[in-house]
Length: 563
Image 1: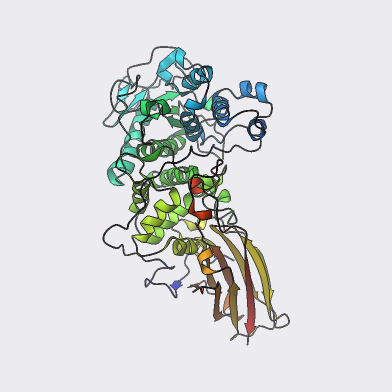
Image 2: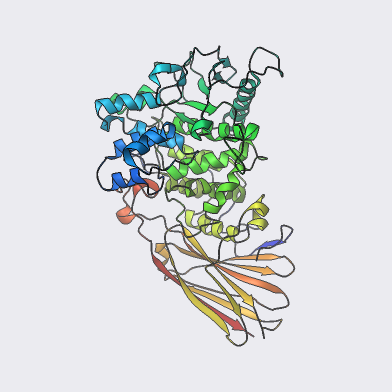
């Protein structure tokens, strides 16, 4: 049962008065000690389901580099790849940037012929005939429109041309190009000027740099391939043969030429809204490339999706991913580098910002993840954990609060009335006859479960409910919260204190005349890795390519009616 948005929120047992959780809002002074950067393996391949290409990889018919090449080719010529492999799925239209990132990272593992094909895919549209696999222009481009921070490139004919209407302003430049240029400047102003992120790196060292050091955005007909846009790199330092020791690269981007609703039908964004969120998302990937182009898939996509809503709050295209988020799928680990949850994980970024009251917490996490010559290159979870420590708190407390917030999103999140409520693992009506309930859940790392207790027949108006959990030892990550939702709409939050042995208990009101339900949120907040190792999982299933140490843990609960 969800409480109303107008509900009165009361936090009990929280270290900071007025906050709904365990971690405080007041930052500490000074930085905490962090680990030195360490070499890391190639990033996880973008998952696109169990199709013929994935099966070929799994059976050893092709290696990861060939898989990356064919997956990238499928972005632009899906039928050709299907002709060779069979039932190959189309990648999520938002995944093109990291599909191409996978290819860049594996260039040195390709044969000479394959490397030539890869460079054709990675070429800029203005490379023309050198870009037959992608969206190379077949005519000479028009004079680029360069603004303060970037250049828009386009052609005036062929299918890649935008509509040539030149009404507002009547300046000899197609209105779509003017709009795209203005959108780029709006995005830059929010992400770089206002939020303080590092600007994309200069591309002057690229053979084709668009004519200057500014970021280049190319307009092409991507809608025929089902793509909104993408960013990639032709930075010489991105070629493994360059022996460049770091992971920060320049980028260029390509966007669709009209976002026609016929190519992007409802419920997906089209027109100006699609242009806006695509630019906000993809430009943030270019920003990320200036920190670490090879970071965790979930960390890159979740923060880029979050940024869409930060720049264009009214569009709300990111809501489509909440069904595959910790709200809709709380049993999927937060840091799973899987197909759709990496986008839905933007809700964790939103939680950190709203619960801390500090938008800059995300930027500082990216500064922790910085893999340039001046960075310390922390992996995604540790980048967040290090920043949360700046608030005098622990990551596990923040993640437990996240699970508690998600129980009643319409109460705690600013736009929570449009968010889904997590599915409950058990819903029990407690009566005088049954006297309570008990049960158990098996939780993997960075997941939550939700159990609801409803007052039933014979429960008095003064009744209380004793709720306890018996979980693994505290070092394995157990946390718990109890949320009491009253008939009046008031909501009371109880973060529980879990003992070293994994036990916690609380007595809360349960009178039938006053209480609508009591929700138990059990949390596995562990981010431990087996033997503490990163970069050992060749599939990079989770953050830092480490094997989770605390999956499959048994959590038992008991609820007893007291009256």
